[in-house]
Image 1 (cartoon, rainbow, N blue to C red):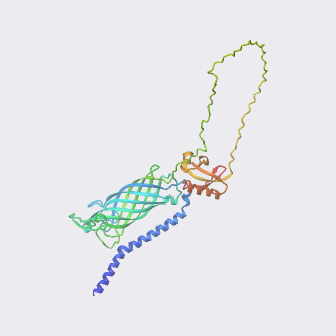
Image 2 (image 1 turned 180 degrees about the vertical axis):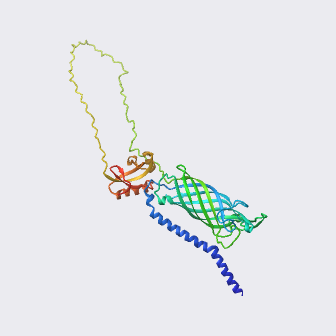
Image 3 (image 1 turned 135 degrees about the horizontal axis):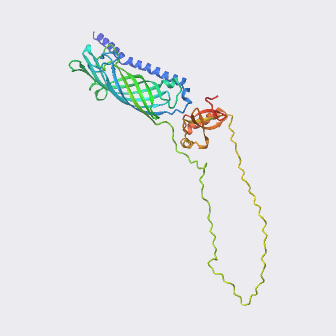
Length: 419
């Protein structure tokens, strides 16, 4: 009898573990595998939409956000719309986020949130209140930059969000009539800090990004959290998972763009400084301080007859003016050439000396042209694509121009695409 009881208990325990632990992990693994597959496929298909356009540079961003926090589970009056009377189900939260935009399509972000949740079930005469600390790691996928071509100063963007995280919460379940606490979850009995209950979560949702300035943007996001348990509201029923939503409005600041800045080398030999090498000579007369006396003779000196001065006829001097001849060098523009583009800016020029100092490229190697409203800056002139590609790799590896790429010119005008 004891053996049968032990076997039954083992089967029930295995089933509970399967429901509470293995099934959520299996679901999580499937979602992550699908997500990785989606990233690999989409990055290959849509890589050309941004690989050779307008010089995207990865950057960091920090966000501050706040908004509504709404629970979905057993103790809830309506399945979707929260009630606002007889114990309001609307609660609020706030958080901060640090992220890295690694391409126009993909970004990685870490987020921390503090929020509150509440739910009411009038037919059960129950309601609960909960507060939580959440930490998650998620990735954003730009829907706009997948569908359309990336633009450096685009005003808006729509993106999807998916990720994983953990939440740490305390919950009190109360009698709706007497307001007495009838049950607690966490509050010293959990395995997280300060005895809070610890649960893993899956996050998924979307957002809209609106550009305010070069480094500032406004974000509106709504993201659902699915928990690995059904006990946040204190009631375990046929539902396996509780969930909650965080809809927020935030502001973000971009910083740390990956534009390598190096100290400029000394290129003074291209423009040597003039030095004063004039040596001043001073003539010194050693006899100027000695008085000159006429010689004294004991015998009388006969005066010599006057000598007529010889008249020197000066021949007229012919002055020949030789005009300096300047050799006129005509720059012949090749009919077709490959160059390597290092920067582009819409509407405004960039100082060539600034680019020279930034990338350690002699200023005389950098050419400036205009194309579709952009000021573009290129290096080199090559007859074949292979030669230009070698120069591109050199600029990427040794000069820090991580997004340098090969472009084609015809009669001094840049072509929209390589032939």
